[in-house]
Length: 145
Ligand code: CMP
Image (cartoon, rainbow, N blue to C red; front, side, top):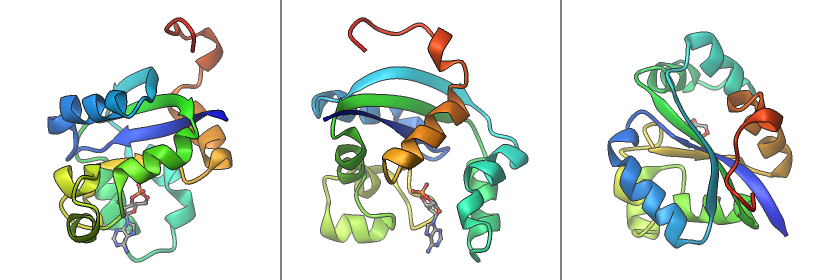
């Protein structure tokens, strides 16, 4: 089914934004909303609240606030699973071993600095898309999206 998902090009991925957008387009997903934003500490903590108890949380928040990110709403058939497949494993080093053509293999560094984020399911997408695109209903949209 046709689905939406949230992608984030993280601070270390922004230098390769063009390559990442090109890969998204080549895989047949449509970019229906896009926004470059520098997250505050509070915003990053809220976005990743489910990881608050993890040892890597402070490092994650530090990383996600270290520079601008680009949030993308992607639309397409099975967009959640397809974007996750394109990203590859969380750990960029594992990605280079196991899925060398994935985005994280190509543009990530390690298991924290991993270039991109993707919603892990439809419910997560429904929560994460309005986090970055709160006025979704009023936002301009490309035709057919
Ligand atoms: P993301 O898919 O955005 O979701 C949570 C993020 O936390 C993840 O990408 C990584 O940036 C980071 N992360 C997840 N697992 C670990 C880990 N084991 N050690 C360090 N960072 C992690």
